[in-house]
Length: 415
Ligand SMILES: *Cc1c(COP(=O)(O)O)cnc(C)c1O
Image (cartoon, rainbow, N blue to C red; front, side, top):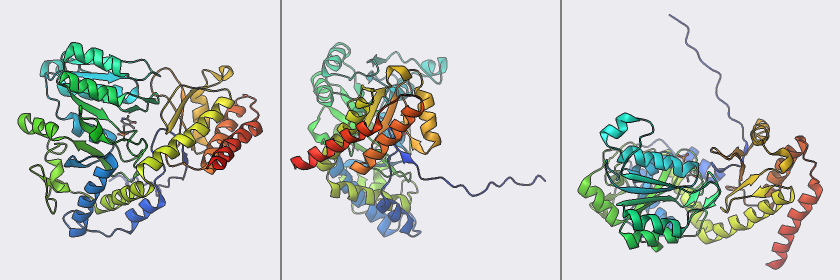
């Protein structure tokens, strides 16, 4: 018998996660996770917690959709559930302008592909019924682009990311929803990066029938919990009529555990799979926190602090190409162009988690999820500037920090 290999206990340090996600989970949420007792998934308080989460989630999404709940897992788990209504041969138009909508486009092609198409290229099928419209990195999907393609293709489904985190771009949700309505397409939206950061109510976008988000960005509940989803009655009717090739990610069946049965709220959920009381408690606290801070206030705070960061990196000679309020995507000063990965690796080695873009062109991404204070933004700016200077940028960081301090003083004076 070989000796078993047992590693030392795993220790993971606290870092400054200043990337596109995950954001720093609030200590209140971690405390809720840790103080929860062992209770099975049918225990009364666990079930009550799930029903209360469902009700709070409707407020966070701004919706009356009965089918609003969390899918256990990451953002792509919620997206998989939402995209599960797409069946082989379905006509779909997917708008892609970066890494994440690109992966969503791949999921859509996998689901819409026929058996022959899937066999021909199992990991990257080209489905004849899917049109992928690629918008260049760094640009937004506009209402005009959506209108033109939907008018021509008249697809059953249309897909877009609300905020494309790969390139840091906000896409035109209003234009997308209206084009879907005009051309009879059922809109599906990846709202992974916008929920809990942007101030929007999904019921204001009637062309969109399905929405999916994630636990770790705006909702700030990383102890792997729930990906929020919401579906209109029209979407649910579609799944009821045509089915979905999944038990666990079935949008109708998955809702039962959250107390949604036959289109109605019921007093307590029924077994679908083993939910974790720890995860439910953490998610519950994250939603309470979000509602206490207020969606509109959070959106204003993100916009305010993102502007401070954007002005500071611009003063360092960087060029910002993003317009999301939780993330700055930038080109380095010309003298450092091509050294993005080196910069990011050096920062990571010091516990400062910034990111490159994951698709071409290579840019640097700095995020501010749950870093909404002058002290936090100043720390991010200082660390980023130190990294650039180590590579020889020669930036006068005192001047940059003075500019940053002025941004905050002016804002406080204006209040
Ligand atoms: C982060 C992100 C995802 C993936 O989320 P995971 O939690 O990593 O599964 C999908 N879409 C967008 C727009 C994202 O920003």
